Length: 362
Image (cartoon, rainbow, N blue to C red; front, top):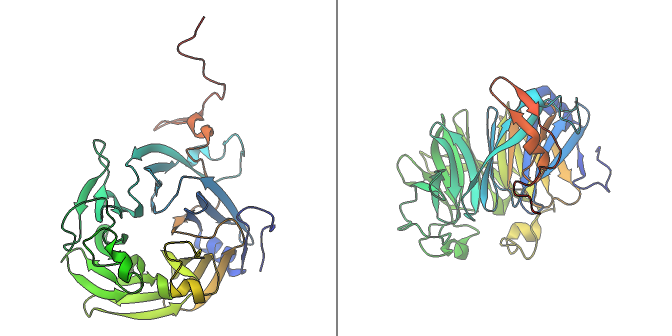
């Protein structure tokens, strides 16, 4: 398979259908790797994959809607906007990018261990794993809780059930996943390998239990998909019957799922022995693999794979960037984003000279 030079950070190898398919679908991908502290953009020219890593502190869930992107990091929710008008004139690489994500605000929420993030009809909603609840942003508070499981009796920073995944239906939150039905501090850990649950937000009921570490629930054209991380399986769920079917066995610790066209992009991680999940069967038995697998949604057939060769070992999320063939991004650690000045009708690249002190001495 083609590959970047092995000496490059985040080098990868991939089968030919990966760049061909992304070009055909007219999209790029974005991946979060909290272990490496990077958000990675993956773009295609039809023959090769180009990687663009950007630094964020412990990035986890990613939400994408139109020109908006939100990233859950260790202490903040970072909100970015795609300013396409500024992409061609980006001073460092003019004429390279067709879009350019720029940080526009940061919400300092504290270390909530936020997992999934989703833009909904009610605004941005996140999974607050530390407090076992769903939340929205509020400029007055760290967060505003909007829902918690019935079995969780109080909001407390105790990670009682390891709430992690959120699926929406027609823009409304509909299903969540958790690793246990527990109401004590980190009580989910005792039965973590097969104690997972899927909860219907409309009824508040657990529609499926005994799951092998469920993550990344996604509703696609009326079908509810999810990943069972400790058994490396992609499943479809029938909430009415309280049952599921295995679509395909995959590699590694699966977590992160994005639909595009007739395909599903699934992320896999390697598990370190000293990791929280290092004692799982998947960590002992599965083929070591960190990367992306593309599966045909209707048949479950394997279409292509991309594997990271170095630097990136664990992925949390993957999202699709529709209509963007070569996206760029400026992270909050890159001071160049401060020069990107956008107005409703105009854009400017500001002066890059150092600012003079407002309080000169002497």
